[in-house]
Length: 280
Image (cartoon, rainbow, N blue to C red; front, side, top):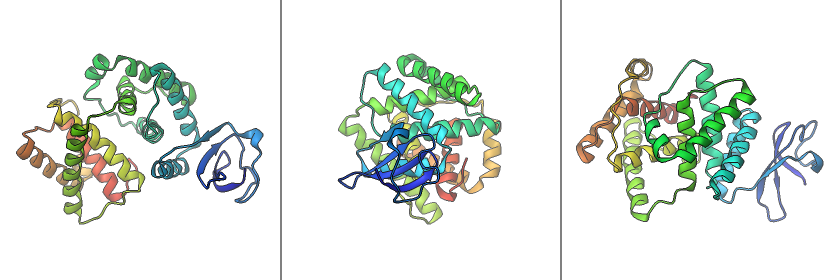
């Protein structure tokens, strides 16, 4: 195997005989190596082959932007979940879960806690996925000596719900239409065109998928326990919050959907990140 691109000492990209790029990982795999060098195949621990080229590119971007330990841990959790669920998981789980774990640990270290507004629903309707979430918290604690709150087990569970659930064509169309409406408001408000290949945009769209599904199911979460945090975010990210308010007004008028403060908080954070490329 010939090295095509080096991320760090433990992760590289190679191209197979068909020109397909694959991420290869292993301890010290690229130590003192450069592009074009031969790999020591005895050091290979994992080879990632993601079928969708766009997802594969985003995965490479993710691997290059975060510590490799999060990628390794994420893959261990995915492998465990696949066995428990006895299902093939969508390739997007390799992006969404790893990115979420990294962001969750970073938030925890900074003293920022996010309450899971649908934790009760997850525990009730997605018991197996929630148990996987709890197991993931154990694995995170073992790896990083950090115990994330139970809310995070719920967030992790939802990633696996999405990875195995197949939505009907009508619901997919409705979700896509709603996402297009929201992104159009953001685009118009900030006079920008999104880079749809960026990791920030992918994170934003992933959030909107869950948000749209709740709206279409008529589920509104009027939980005001994070009002203090929302006030802080409102003052810190003024433009993003004002845009979130416009979206809320639109949703109330067209869909008669009352956006809760919790949902407004998450929406503001994601708008701030996708517009200003802020690492939150």
